[in-house]
Length: 579
Image (cartoon, rainbow, N blue to C red):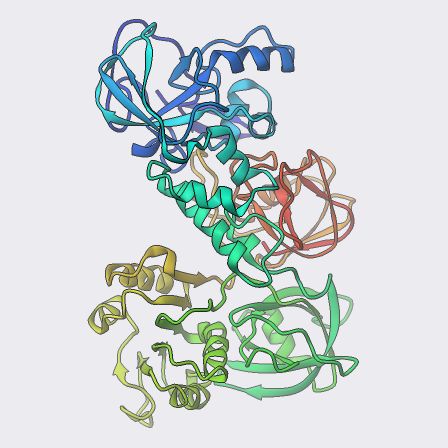
C-alpha cells in the first residue's frame, strides 16, 4: 500500500514499494486486493490496473548495474513473471492467470519513483534506453490469482506491435508513420497512448512540423523559433486601446520584413526600467494581423506592474526593444470546423490575432466571438473586432459588459449585461465540433473550459493560454498544491550565469550546488512540471528564449529545436526560460 517516503527535503506518497505475498489475491477491475497506487494521475485506473515485470529483466539489471540485492517487486510491479518479454508481448494480447483474464494496454510510463525505489536516479531513462519498460494489464475478467500459476495466452493483439516497439515509437527517435498508424489500429491501446499516437500522426501531417516529439509534450508542436536569442526591434507606433491597455507596433531595425508569427503566439521582450537596474523580461501576446512583416503587442498597465508601467512611462517611437522570436503553442489550427474565440479583458489579444487571420483568409468557417469587459472604457479593440467580424460571412458576436456605463449602448457597444459566464455559454450552445480558444484570468478560463466541455466539446478541442506562470505538476509530492510566490533561493547567492524565468518575472544567478535547472526552479518556488527527472518523459520540456545549456545525462530523445529539458540540463551561459 502507498506510504510516505522522504526525498530531497520533500515527502513522496507512493505505492512503488512492493513486496511478495503468499496465497491467492483477488484481482479487480481497478486494483489487486491489498495493493494501491499513491499517484492515480500517473498510475492505476482501469487501463493500468496491473503492472508486469520480468525475471529475465531482473537478471539483466543485476548484471548491468552490478547489483545482487534485487528482489521481486523492486521495480514496482504487481506481477513478477517468468517469460512475457517486452520484445514478444504485443499490445492487445490477452492472458489468463488463475481465475482472471487480462489484456495488455501499454508500456510502463516511467517516472522518478522507480529510481527512488531502486536507489538509481537514472532508472526511468535506463528502462526506456535499454528497451525493458515492462507493461500494464487491464482486467477483462476479475478473479483470484496466486504466485506459481501458469500464464496462458488466449489471443494475440491486432497489428502484432510489441511493448518494446511501441515504447520506442513514443520515446525514442526514428519512428515511422507506418508504425504510428499501426498503433492507432489497436483497440486495446490505452486512451492516453492513443492520444499520443494521434498527436504524432497530426505532427507528421502538419506543415513546418517541429523536430521534437509532439506525442510527449505540446511544447514540441511549435515550429523552431525564427531567430536565436534576442534582437532589437524598433517601435514605430504607440496606440491607446482602452483605459488600461496600449499597443506597441514593432518593426525590424534594418527595415526588413519580420518573420510571420502564428496567430495566438507571444513575443518575449526585455523592458529596461531605467537607470542601472537590470532589464525586466516579460511576454506579451501578438495582437495584430499575422504575416504583415511587422508585429503588434498589447500591454495592460497594472497598478504595480513594473514592466508595464516602465513601458508606458519611457518607451517612445524610434526606441529599440529587444525581443525573442514569436513562440507559443496556443495558436489557431487549420480546418473547416467552427471556431469559438473566448476572452476576458486583455485576454482578447491572442484571439484577436486569430480573428485577424480568419478575416485575412476570408474564412467561411463558423466563428463565435465571445468577449467580456467591465465597460466601454475597458473594452480594448472594440471597433477593430467589430469591423473584422463584419467581414466574416458566418460569424456571430456576444460581448458582455459586467458594469456598463451610462454611455454604453446595449445592442451597439455590447449585447449582454453581466459577466461572460459559464451559464451564458451553456445557454448559447456553441457547436460541439468546434475548436475553442480561451484566454483570460485563470478562474475565468477554468469556468469557461468546463462550460464548453459541458456543451459537448471534446476536452482536446478546448485550448487555453496563460499569461503568467503555469500550473505545477509534481507527481506524488505531498503538500505540493500550496503556492508560494517565486523568490530568490535560500542561502548564499550563486556565482554563475543569470537564469531568467520569464513568466515568473524572476532572474537569479546559477548556483553549482543545484543539479539542474529544474532544481534551481524548485529552490525558487517557480512552478514546474516534471515526472521522470532523467530526460525521457519530456514533461518538463519548454522553450529556451535565449542562451544554451549542457545536458547530464543526455536526453533519451532530444527536445524540439529551440526547446530544452530542464530536468537534466545546466546553463552554459545566461539563459532565459519560458517558465
